[in-house]
Image (cartoon, rainbow, N blue to C red):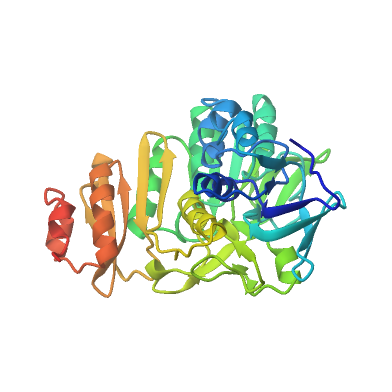
Length: 417
């Protein structure tokens, strides 16, 4: 299962990236009758697995690795999908229709599907590569953290996005003293409105997390090549034995861009996930596309939903049919006993309406742009999440009083045909 055959090896569909998106292309292509050879190439040694549990149940020790596998080994064998593990593509030749891997193997393809995601963005300050400094992107990252945790009392999390807050919640439950540093004036500033940010700041503080906004990092302090603290720009040192960095990703598209594909912050794709290079598709975190739910702006969506839905588009294309990507984005985050579900994109919102009382820990934030509903963040409010999707699809204009009244079902506010 770890080798490729042929001279040179060749696949009708070579999928680069064995995360959610890449694995789903292989699964769906077979489901839809694709009979050609499929290679699924990834830079990790593990079979494809779920990523969201890494910063939640897997880090907490609540789910062993075999429970987050997307499919068992037998599944891939039975469907004749060659798993090419522990390899990374370093060069693409779109004219010859070949790639070169990190072990200097040349592999030919008829269709190339690029689903590589991205690499964690690193700190630019000194000390960023010390022992005890971690990102949360793959199993190996989290396994290293787990191995160190018995000797850790204090953790500094740099970055107040979802990954950082989820890790803070888990580590706090494990008895660690956690400080979260966010450079902006509130957590979740890039992805949510102020009502949700302030709610999560308060929740974390109630659980003992030291949330610091407007915090700028100067460097990581060290002793014997291990992190011992984080020095802030004002000179304060926060002692710790572990640093977790969650400041975004850099899309892994260098070989495609070097081969001539259009793109900058990711590789540009059209509605059917085709790049500007012939017979090369891209999807997931690394694919920049014009999204109708972002007002047509070209964006990258870092979510399992986006990866899976774009995988469906690509699998359909492999089978000779056309499907345009037009799915409502959705996300989720679990922190403590709070289940956050998001539908739509709040990009460019100019107004928010809060449904319910955040103090009850059951409420929703509705985002509007030019009077139209574009997104909802729902905390322990599954009904709003389910019913709110139709408002987002319709771009509905709804009286604010009705939106704010949690006794009014959102489905009753959906415009008629």
